[in-house]
Length: 220
Image: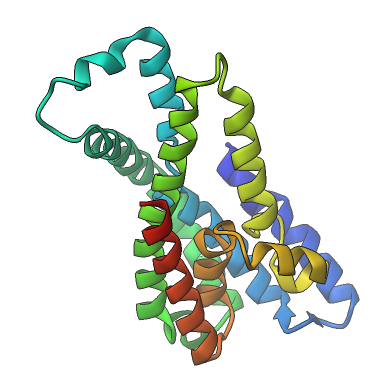
């Protein structure tokens, strides 16, 4: 139901605002903003994992100690656990996605959607380990905190604010974009979504992909 918030509320609010401003704000049209939020729902079903909650449960219950003597990677185990859950969730989401894709095709040209598709796929592939590794780092705080709920809440609130979940950064204050540009969240969420919903110059695509790689190396 939370995924439907990106489809049922945010796009239509911004669509009305954009139409009242003449059909475009800072390069974003009504059709582009609808595409952005529809794929936000798809994106969340593919990329957004929550290993930090699973890790906290195992750490607090003492089950984590069972993995210390096992000859395999705990991080790999957590990733496979989350990936299996996301696969099932995405299959259940497909019936909702088909009519949404029809809406996109009828509001925006296919050329605008597919022209940068190879870069979109690459950006999404890089966003998965980038977000997952940061979530694992947040999950590790359960070793030191009696209740890591606050840390998890702050992390996901930062992802929403600095990741562009509420709106594209062109529609947000410039100061927010400046702060987000030096944080990883923008390259996890906003960058792949902008590629699929809005034309992006080649230098910006290269910069975004490099920032994803740099953050992956940093958190690893």
